[in-house]
Amino acid sequence: MSDRIVLSQMVFRGRHGVLETEREQAQPFEVDVELHLSLREAGIADDLTRTVDYRDVFELCRTVVEGPSHLLLEAVAEVIASELLARFEVEEVVVRVRKPEVALPGELGYAGVEIRRRL
Image 1 (cartoon, rainbow, N blue to C red):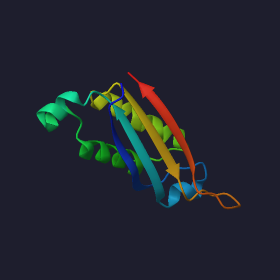
Image 2: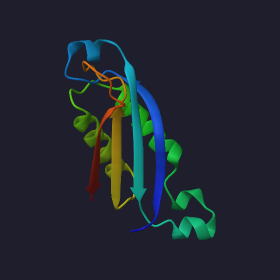
Image 3: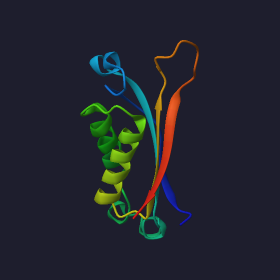
């Protein structure tokens, strides 16, 4: 499927990380989501009910990131992907989660993961 809906650079504050200090204080997490589905009917009919409302996708991502803590970015991405596949009629999702404030002894733009899941 070549059609997709993209939400890029969403930023939420969450408490995820292996270190206890990372779970005590909220920090920023950046999320990108790609939803693969046919957009033909929605485009022809100009009808929101024939596609996925990205407001709902945004809120789902917010709920996961701002919700219960996870040790790994992989777990955060997996929960988002699983929820997207369960809730919306999509064939495939790509989820990227980035952590720009990584607790390392040097400079780093971000640490992140990218996963791709299909039904």
